[in-house]
Every structure is written in C-alpha cells, then in structure tokens.
Image 1 (cartoon, rainbow, N blue to C red):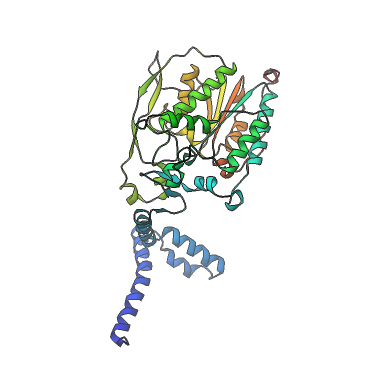
Image 2 (cartoon, rainbow, N blue to C red):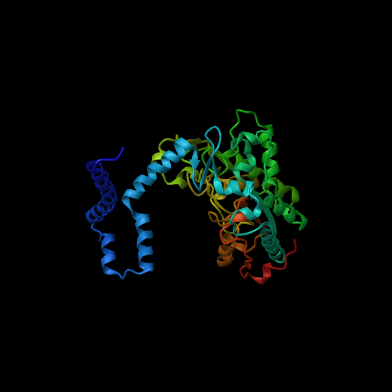
Length: 391
C-alpha cells in the first residue's frame, strides 16, 4: 500500500526532529554549564579533515544524548544478552571475568594483539635476577594466576572437568624460568591443590565480581611464598609479633566498574569480603612497610587490593610480613609489574640498600599484556660496600 503524503511528511519531520534534537540538547546543556557550545567551533575553525575529525571525536566523548543512550544500550546488552563488551565476560553463577585475561588463556598467541611474549618475559626476569645476584640479592618470582586459570568451570560448563587451566604462553614462561634456574613459586599448582582440598562451603580463592584474589587466596599465596623463603634459609624469621583483626568490607568488583555503567552496578549486590587486617601486637596499629627492611616486594594490583585500599593492611604484603614476623618494603603499580615497578625502583635507589631478597609478583596476563611490555631495566646505583655479598 502506497503511503499517503501526510504520513510521509510525518515520518520525515519526526526523523529530522530526532537528528536535530541531539545537537540542540547538547547546546542547551553546555550553555547551562556556562560552557561555549562545541557546535560553534565549526564556525571559528577551517573545515579541514583534521578539524572535523577532532570535532567528531570530541562530540562522541562528551555528547549528553550519546552517553545516556550508550548507558542504556550497555545495560541491555549485559542484562539481556549477557554480553559484557570488550572488558567483561559473564560466567556462571554470577561470576564475571576480565575478557582480555580470558583471551590470553583461550586464544592462540598470535591471535591476540599483545605487548610481549613469554620469551621476552623470561629474558627480562633472568636479566633482573642476574643483576640482583651480582649484588648479593636473591630473587623469588611469584606469578599470580588469572582468575579463569583457577576457576575455569565458573567461566563455562565445558571446563567443569578441568582441575585448572593454563595458557600456552604462561606455561612457556614458567618452563623458561625453571630452565634458567629462577626461583619460581608455582601458585597455579598451589591454588589447584588447595581448591581441590577445600570443602564446598569454603570461601573461594578469587572474588566473583572482581579479577583479583579473595582474602583466602592472598593468605594462601603469602603463606606459600613465606614458607619457600624460610625453607631455603634465605631469610630468618623476625621478632615482630603481629595479630589478626577481622575487617570485613563491601566491595563492587573492578570488572563491574570497568563497564562504567552505574545503572548496571546498582543491580549487583556488593560482595561482602571477609578481610583480615594485620596489626602489631604491642601497639595495635595496622601493619606498615619499612624501607630499611631486608626484603623488597614488587607487584601490581594483586598486592594493592586490601592493602592500599579498604580496609588497609589486609593484603598480600601485610600477610607476608606476618608469616615472616618482620616488615618488608614494597613498590606497587597497578598493571605495571612487568616493567614499571622496576623503572620506579631505578628512581628510588635507597630501596635496594642492604636488601637480601626481592619478591616479584605479577599477574599471569601480563606475560602478554604487561604495560610497557618486558623491558630491560638497569638497577639503580648503590653503595659499592653493599655489592660484594655473595648469595
């Protein structure tokens, strides 16, 4: 049936109204904020390709209508289609996973755009180990497994039979380090054994809504690393008495926050996390680092969680200090454990003074996705009097 002229006019007017209302809304909002409307910049600049592209990009980032519609679209995409976009994967039983990390596990090494390879990671770690050894300092490496490597069955039913999972590059990195006689704490195997032995009612080793380990996971990691060090005789137990103080917190997972959809965050109940804070017995004060300690710990957000953020002094570093009965020094950089922590160490040479041991944690996905890759970074200059100690 041929549309009537009146219907055609109605559709045309409606279409034009939708097109122009977005721009008009943006102008009104910016004017009410006391800002110069972006649309007017088109009248003050030459209509070159570069200027038009810059205007288009800026409009996409600041458009009020686009943000509103994008928020609803992302909410619908997640809630109805179980699609988390580029950052998140929706697993089973309310579990969420960081999508780039999962791709490191499931994709072939050349199928994903990466910043580095296992071979480059091994070269950088061995070089760092050798530099430290030349100064009489030991190195212990403790890669933190990705969440999906420990709980693949929470990602998909097809992995229900797996005890654990490990990516090709992760295995190559571990094999390369062991072949080079680098001291490695294999938390992949430790977590797999602990998970198999835990009763079904026990808290999991990782958070459901977050990419990081739970208090149970970090405590197990700290105990394992401390035991390895003490068994090797590289560090003797200290004399500082620490006590445990329950400090539960409510936390919205970082995977939800990455989506930047407040409407979606409000639909999830924050996880109640049974954190345990470490306090000094004689003062009752929360754990604090000591720059003059024998041990330096390097790491990423797996060391920051619960330690630098709420409740504080309840993360891996504090629990490691409790197990060793002595404080440690630390450098923590979110996402930067592959290279940025060593660059910061170069800028802070005092942290290496009189050190006997360096513990280096980095998350598994950084083998391929570490910020700045795995660069060779020299150690900072130190007092020559401390460089003649042999391991």
